[in-house]
Length: 141
Image (cartoon, rainbow, N blue to C red; front, side, top):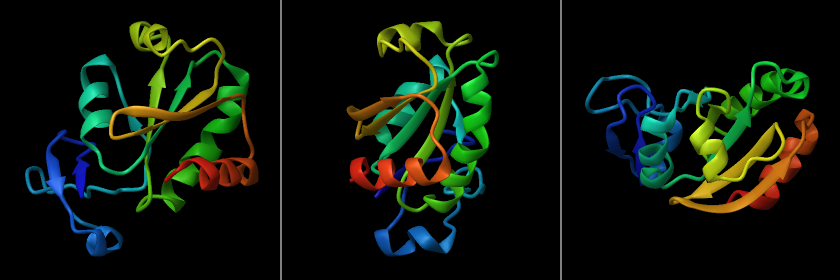
């Protein structure tokens, strides 16, 4: 399974059986699945979305958005709990306006699930931990 390092963007091959064994990046030595959302900008977005074999859940958000702030700790918690099943990323729509436009983000927060570069699901609006868990169980392959 290919997993992109959130620190140096190197593509690491990790056997499925080793995903839960805290694999480290062959290039920079950082944990590959550290259980934290990765902040993506336009330059890092494409590689991270297309080269990860695990589904990538992207939170499109903005700093002024109250529901985004409310959901942020829930998203961080989910990233830690699902670290071996999905990658989690955040895109600040104020800083990456071209990405927000490219993916037709009309309201925030919007969560989009990508699998091998293709969008497979999306939802808009803040969710509590239980609703996020249920949604992920339905949409993450």
